[in-house]
Image (cartoon, rainbow, N blue to C red):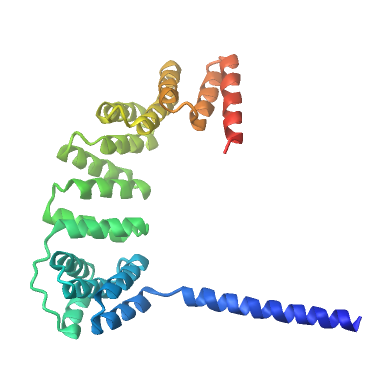
Length: 293
């Protein structure tokens, strides 16, 4: 009994040690953006610009709003003689927080004789915020783009997608319409406008936008075209146009025969239309595809 108790205590002690080591490793791996920014500054001070660039990029990936990290990345690029990239980072730093930018200029005595009115860098900032789902910050960046260039296609389209995600459908429609006015040959804008109309129960308008998207999408993009046919089928179904819905879903299957969701939706529509044999057939295909990896 004593031996068993001793073994148990030894086993518990070893496990506790392992847990502590694991926690230390995890703790050490969770570096903050400020940590990488400071490390990047050290590399810059030692003239190790390549290491500085890699490290500061990690800081910005963790927090796209770190104006000082953008500024220091600009310094690192400048040290490597990469003037355009340096300008881009200084511009991003200035547009994120002009006060922090000014403080960094004084702190590092960096000469930044640039004009920061390039919409490309602001669009890049907006994209970085989007990747981190920082929607309010992304909206701020893209709206600043539009102050400089009211017809910027990317900014309008990006704002449309953000407003759609946030459920602000009126603004989403306005932005997608502005994107379409800037470029009528943009299938993504028509498709996403269709999605917004559908979410608002405006099925006829959704159908119109989906159809336009199909006319603009290349025939070679089978999966994307299939997806639009699927959405078009759903819109027809909700508008109680069962024959048209079935037709569109079959067009989707011609492009992507093993698409589970299409078979499932067909089974639903066939059942609703009283076509029970067809519904059962599609349901069996759906169940079979579900079991496949």
